[in-house]
Image (cartoon, rainbow, N blue to C red; front, side):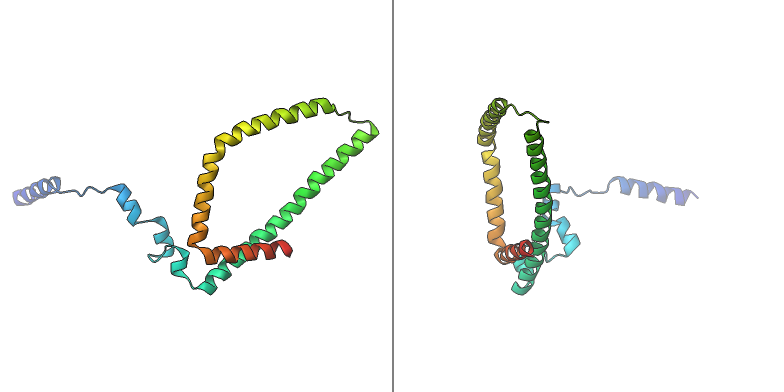
Length: 157
């Protein structure tokens, strides 16, 4: 019994003296990216993974879906805006609604000034987004070309 207790005490001492490895989380995150676990270790830029035909097909299919949805949503939005405008014109013409055009003009000018102020502040964010998008398109030119072609076909269908 004393022998067993002595071994347990020795095991406790050894476990307290264990050496722990310090892991730098930023390095770990760079080496073990989430897409590596989802898509495998060979994931990276699309141009390195798939053939040109596969990239064009993937881009074309996603572009067609996006174009088709854009067309459908655009038609619904145009119908809603046009119908609302038509109803307001009819209401104005029949006398149900009186429009104070001087106030409308004043509010539009005020909105223009406000937009000009906001546009000058937002320009760096927009430029960085455009640079990122341009870089992505350059790195994945075949996929992007397929997407644009599919998008145009989706708009036409």
